[in-house]
Length: 340
Ligand code: UFG
Image (tube, rainbow, N blue to C red; front, side, top):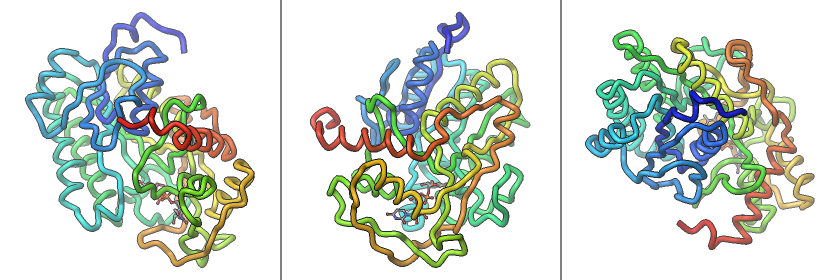
């Protein structure tokens, strides 16, 4: 994307910019010529993941520190990624999720309003739909989360809608489907001490770090009996954030968009593709259903395609898995580079 004079002088504050999705968005912002400041408590993020701009280590609970950062950098817009994301943990410890994902978002919003930041981009999730009644899912589908993680995000969406009605404030909420893949140069990618996501677990099984991949349930009402998900490459998602930002900075109003490609793959199809990409026939066993997994989650993404002219470039499961594979191999071969 060419640098514009507007973007080079425009500072964007990114909470959670040292995490998986946030760091890919920081990369995209930096490449587009924006000034970036990442605000991250490094609970799950990493300093090496911040490829552009400044990193301020801080927590959203620390209002004064947050205000100082806003004062110093004077951001034009805020992108808010910092959140807990582990569904089973949210069931065991809901208050942790309501504190960090919901209450801390209120801290951030209050700071935005105090310091005159009127543009806000929020990381939402397909988990807001719970177990959807219709596939593909449009943004108008009912919000019926089935776990505290999804509920914590729904609450923020409702707060954002109220803020947009009450104050000079506009937001875009992006509801992510199954985000996967990594930077094609394998500089950044997903890191988790206890990975739960299918593609990451499949690749770690191929590397021998996990003994065998378990398929959680083979009796779902889908063609091959396993769950279907809409996997989206993290760089396409990052690009959606840039378009949302341009929309708000050019005076656009508040919007909610699904971010997925609009078609899904079953767990078995992902496993087959992971075996093909890696060339490794890693062990797979069929197990019981995992609690809380809806049979299918597929986005209707026509709204973001039509309104923001989002044109994904990596709608290709093999590419998604290949970039994740290069990243997993790099993590295994050079652990010293990713220690902090
Ligand atoms: N799965 C397995 N074995 C594994 C891991 C996963 O069979 O070892 C299955 C799951 O049961 C599910 C599918 O693979 O059917 C995808 O599971 P993930 O854990 O990779 O992702 P989820 O669909 O559970 O959730 C992700 C995000 C949520 C988000 C959702 C939206 O973690 O925050 O995508 O689609 F809401």
